Image (cartoon, rainbow, N blue to C red; front, side, top):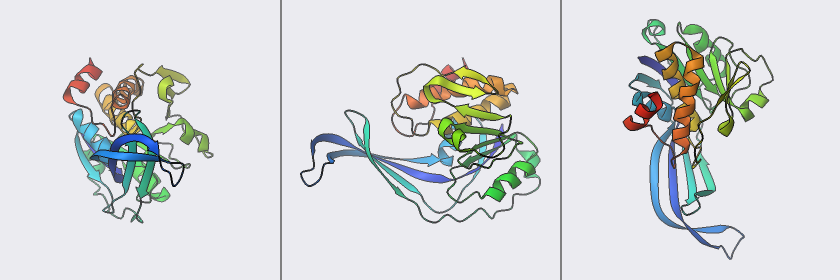
Length: 246
């Protein structure tokens, strides 16, 4: 399987420590730093999870570096602060070769609406590609000729045309598609960071494997359940994939 993946990217930084007291200067917790973890997020997380399923991926993203830093009390797993560094993002200008629209098995767009994919480019890419298109976007104006994956809060903000291929993730409830709810796997939720990226990757793989979105959604639910069971931005392992596919 070969996938063309386009989207916003970032670096996720996690600073873990212990909170044992409040700051005497202000009513905020003091984090006693213990360790730091860095991983690639957004489109890179989608890419790595697609690769976990054995998919060959070509990725296009911006050169500017968005950094998300989270400060977490390790004992309670409570995030006490997030700091974002967001430079101005240069919109995509690369013209994809015409032969690419039939070379790849699917087009996946991970659009965090940071400026890399403009509104016009979102529609242009969706219309350009000849195979199945999967879009995870925070925009409120969306194409009708693609599988659109949004969460509940994003869905409520859509005021324009709502396509039939809208896939709405609802956390612990599951995923809704064309009026049917596909139940989520029952797990202890540890961290929801990156779960949507994992879902998107597994959804794409599931559709390419089975040829039906109705079979891809349960697989994506399983993958997302694995992701939220771990701390931080999580990439599925070979063992995870075996369990998901069994």
